[in-house]
Amino acid sequence: MKVALIAGILSASFFNVGTVTDPAMPEVPAPSAEVIEVPTVFTGTATWFDATRHGRATWYTRNGITLYGAIGAEVRAVKQHYFQTEWLVRITSRLTGRQVIVQVVDECTCYGVRSVQGDEPLIDLSPAVWQVLGVRLGRGVMPITLEILP
Image (cartoon, rainbow, N blue to C red; front, top):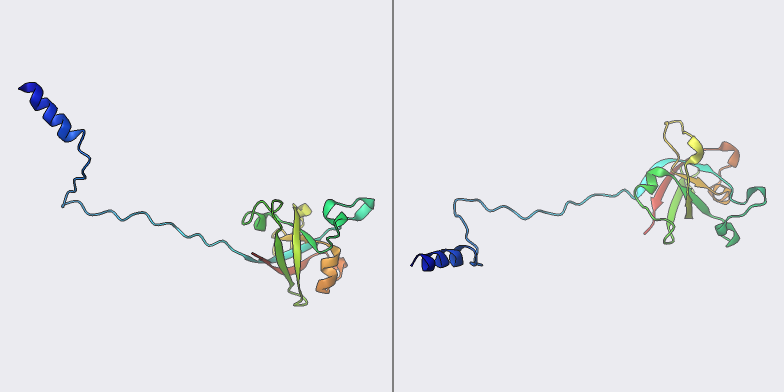
């Protein structure tokens, strides 16, 4: 008799697949997915670099790409793996209002250059980009808006 009673308790507690709800316990809502807004437009500065200087040309200039840029840490933190797919950004000069589409081909540390605001540049741009934007290279630093394109 004790064996039958123990078997009945075991089958009722361990093998019961039904769900028991306690009416006194409030229902807990399912966790919701938090939406994190990722910025696609940045305002800051650009510097310049020439990947064809001193008789050495990098892979992208040998492939004929002249409107290129090397992305800085702030933008790189938002969109990583720039080297795995073609990555384009729209650069708008805040000096001239002109815009150009630039292919991101590298990353930069921007060599510690700081703008007037004290921030690191968003991107290093090729001399051809500066020319299209109508800003002379001698300026060194240009205020820009950078938009990541899909």
